[in-house]
Structure formats: C-alpha cells, structure tokens
Image (cartoon, rainbow, N blue to C red; front, top):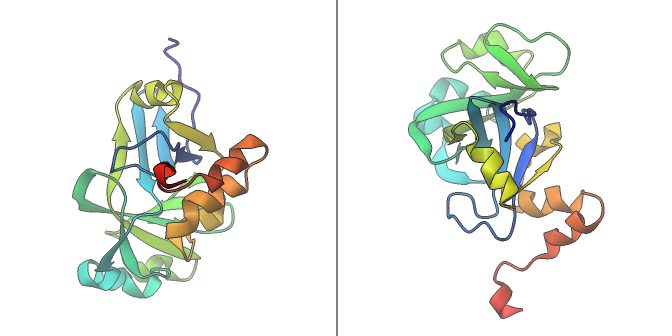
Length: 187
C-alpha cells in the first residue's frame, strides 16, 4: 500500500448497506481532515434530543434547525465541535475553512465575532476518527461510498433523510442504493 493518501477532506463517507456497526449504520460522515496520519469526521445524520442551549447557551441562537446537538461519532462524546457555513474566500477569526464554504467554528470564541458572517451552525458531540490507514482499509472492504459534499448537507432540516438524499443525487447505480430497504428480510 502506498504511504501517501489521496485526501478526501471535505467529502462525505456514506455507509454502505453492508456496514452494520451501530455507530455508523446508514451514517453520512463529513470528513473534516483526511491524510496519511488518519481521518476525522462528524456524522451529519444523528440528532440527539439535547438542545444546543442546554450545553452551549451562547451558541444556541446561531444553531440551525433542528437546534439540537448531533452525535458526531463515538470518540470524545464529552467534546463539542462546531461546523458552520461561511460564504466567501476569507472567514473571520474563530473559523477554519475545511472545504468550500464549510468550516470548523472555534466554540471558545465569542459567538458575536462570527454571528454576522455565519450562514449556518451545527454542534456535534464527539467525532468519528480513524488511525493511519484504517479508513483506507474500510474503503477497500466496501464499508463506505465516498461522494462529494454539498453545503446543504450540514444544514439538512431533516437529517434522518440525509442518507437516502445523498445517495439519490448520485449518478448511475449508486442512486439505486437509496431504495435499499431498512430491513431487507422484510422485502
């Protein structure tokens, strides 16, 4: 295997129907960083019942609907990550571009510093992480589809529908996977 990894930063990992790990079954993961040292992402379609105001009151007014915390993955569930949209080429202090208009929000920064420019904000508890070569192995095993992200993916108003929606917009046979039944044994 080559030691150099082709970066998928900013792209989506969409769980294949064969991936049955409960942490990632039907998950849509936005890769925030992917290189030869490993990968970090957040699961975009796992809302929790916890309101943003319950844990990060200063950011509650800026959090998009639904205004809840999302479970970003199984790692560091006690840590919060902010992912937001800021159009344009330069973002303000407290924001780091990941891909296009998508970036990481520094939740230690005062919200008013970002409020005027932040088009959308979603808060994640925890993240998904892979060590060096681990994600590449999962990709070779067919656990994930890698597809392009769109800014609307992080702001999907119905995140429970995101897995199907992302697959449906793909070309060819991959779009048909969106019709895969939740429980194939009932088919």
